[in-house]
Amino acid sequence: MAPTPREWLWYLLVFGVGCSLWGVALSDLLQQTWSQQSLWALGALAVVTFASLFRYVRLSDDAYHSVYTLDDVPLYALIFLQGWQAAVVVAGLARLLFEVVRVFQAWRQHPERVHWAHVLYHFSNIPMTVNVTAAAGLTYLALKGPEALMEGPQNMAAVAGATAVWFFLAFAQNSLTLTLRRQLPLSWMLQVFRQNLRYIRLHVLMLVPLGALLAIFLETLPWVAILLLVPVVLMHNALEAQHKLRLESVSTIQALARYLEERDQYTQGHSTRVAGYAAAMAACMEMSDEEVEQVRRAGLIHDIGKVDIPDAILRKPGHLTDTERQIMRTHTDRAVDLGRRLVSLSRELPFREAAYHHENYDGSGHYQLVGEEIPLYSRILAVADTFDAMTSDRPYRKGVALEEALKTLREVSGRQLDPNCVKAFEKALEKGTIQPILAENQRKS
Image: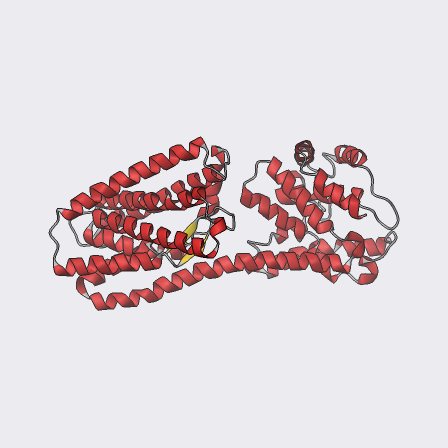
């Protein structure tokens, strides 16, 4: 995918600013007088900065995504210890060498995947890192007082200010780059920013004081500084574990959905279709990529509470009795209970949203939630679930045609279903994202 004109303009801007800042920093650095201890510290931090770039964690699973690296700690130390110029020069050189190595590795392993536009996208990380480092370093220089590092309220405020600038500018640049690379409207930049920011936790902010401690130890007790590797590695492992949990959550969703469909042959493919319909609706409601994905996941597990429903009821070919119908309705309660029990997975698996898909918009449902008291994802799923139930074949009836199902959706809009979600379904129909899923269902029937 070749860069758009807007993307080219962004690259020209970010490379122009980054190269200018790096040139100024190098010029200032060459005019300084360096002691042997300072040169040793600069070389050590440069090596650590380069090495730490190879320990990174993806913040999303998209083709174009942000990553979190551990080079922050040595770069913070350079800012606090030797000034923004040294940090900028090291940041630019380390990132340049890292990107060259990564491109070479990619070319050796998968030469067919190495495209110039992709290389340009990755190499834009070099000036963006330079810009972030310079902005944070200059902020610290402007705010710090005459006391030693981490001494006095003014210096503490300077560290906090540099940290705020670092994180804000880093995520703002990344968000704009990802938005342009994915060829999304600029209005999506805030959503991408929030998507990246949600993975940053308090333990990541601890990298800032670790950088300050590293600077202090390098000045006073250089060999003790090695001990700081332990908390830094633990920080990385925590982020890596979080990413693995997200991947495992997706696998869990898929496995649960397959298990349910294997149990009930008459609704085979139902969860997948509901997930597809719901995701198409969410996209038409201008939700972010992350929110659309969460809606899709909710669709995949919306019937997860049926795992405990007896086969005699779940697989019954005819109509259910009142008693059996009452038992079947308990699957929403089970889904709510799962969400309470599996707290560690509740962020990735939207159990609560999946559980309320049988609530009626007018408050006549099982939990008697009214209107917007029902989670938005649940209201979307209610439309998708109702449509699939009407258009799918059952042993006791044939699925209805698209026009008839659409007519019914409009009739129950405002009573059973959210009118805005029904409109989103109609919009998805106009865009043609519903028809392929429906056609595949009818083909298999």
